[in-house]
Length: 472
Image (tube, rainbow, N blue to C red; front, side, top):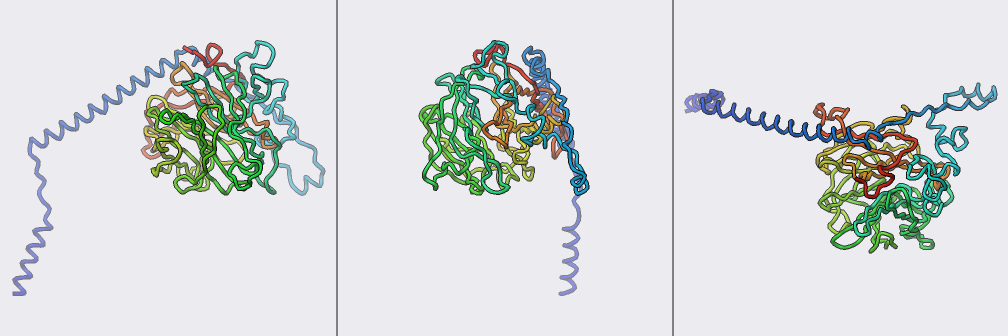
């Protein structure tokens, strides 16, 4: 019995281990080949159509006289100041190290500081006399409102309101003294509130006042003047009729790391502060919100000690986040996200995490807002190498479409002045989406089909036809 069982088991084992013969009927072979040919045809058809669309779009952009003018970048040649005199003992104790241009930028006593922060004599805006600078942007110079005061809307964003047919610029109102919250801590200004300015042409800005004010007495309140309010952004909810503001809320030591929400019935406020929270249970610092074409809004924020960006949809009333969230740009330490959309592709500009010191911007793109996101490279064009590696000595905050010119946008950035934050400047520069991407995909090493993003440096430039209103 045992011998029979053993032989039977061997036969069964060899039977099951035997590889089946590969058989393929002529019909199966023909069907497989036909399927492959069909798939190749679809891929080629899609690629050809996409290439044609991209070529047509690029040709329209290239031949657009406005775009040609905006792409004519300028170069900068900043000479380093002569080194300061040092005693022989100081030189012996610590040999001289060449000073970098970034260090000169951050040094409030630098001999070339005026090149980065020109004084009031060169200010521009509607309240200045003369027509020679009318409607021209001067990146880095003091920008005046209609009353002749410097605009206070740092780290801000733009809302175009369909009801009033006006633009609204919201930002941090930093018109107070700069100080350190603790020894060797970051420079900061007490919360004053969120400033709001209105415009019909994106150049002439009327001060609408502080639309979300600080809390003066209640030290437990999120908006107490000793705390932190940064990067306010406002979107409109057509279902509820409310204007909803999201912002970064923090304590003086930057340990709270939350988002705050406020609402108003009008774009000029006053906004009622609702609450703060840790979105999706995570810390949140630099952030922005984005409203898509289908009216779904998203929160994008730096998290996990600024090592990752998180992105997720808001609830239908825009007052909270849904439980859905994706981690993007993991381990890349990016902040200051500015997101926009063009031809069904989502783009984002981010900066590195270096405090008040400027660093290199990167552009990113995705076919779905929830990712995956691919990095396109440094979008900055012109200036010089140091300018490009420091985002023209600024940091991204928002991107808005250039009216009437598809594929053209305005890149909004802040040139922070850590020695006097109220004197931080604005850099508005033309951003063009067009031309082939110059960086391969991260995982497949192929090149993406979406276009590259370019931000062009100009000492001065202006919108088409002298303004943002009724541009054709």
